[in-house]
Image 1 (spheres, rainbow, N blue to C red):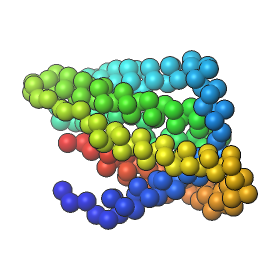
Image 2 (image 1 turned 90 degrees about the vertical axis):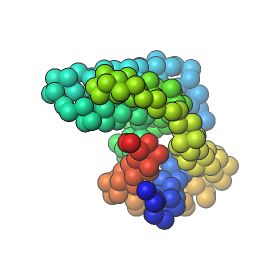
Image 3 (image 1 turned 180 degrees about the horizontal axis):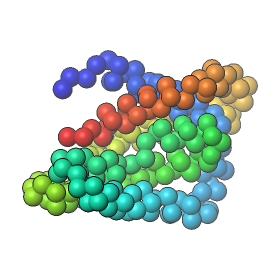
Image 4 (image 1 turned 180 degrees about the vertical axis):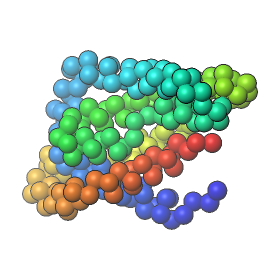
Length: 196
């Protein structure tokens, strides 16, 4: 399948701008606090990596979904949290640093968890013993696209506060249109973790 310029250039650029804007509001202390008090991080990772696939499995079984749909649902449940959650966390005054940390760590864990969940789902629902390979390159792309702009935004916020305030104004004007940002973010997430 050929990718358009929108998906290869436009969506990543839009996502980078959004994440840069989020970084303008963060400090290193926000992330230090999370690692000093890891309880929320551990609970979040447990919910995303274990509880969500188990709930999905229960729903798939309860509704008797067709095998192909069941495998697709399990793939979605195993996929790491997208950048949409980070955007909405910012818009709703949530803990953005925690959200970014969860996304980064869960994306690394997904290198292992997605193949395990999908391979088990293929065998259980479709009777196929196929091997879904690790998606290390795709995971690295997601981490770089999320963390690099955030780090740049944090650096600008810490070192050049006047520039940070100026740059924040266009981002603030985008905030009343969260659905646009959400669509852009989810479009990129779907590109990085496509259902096959």
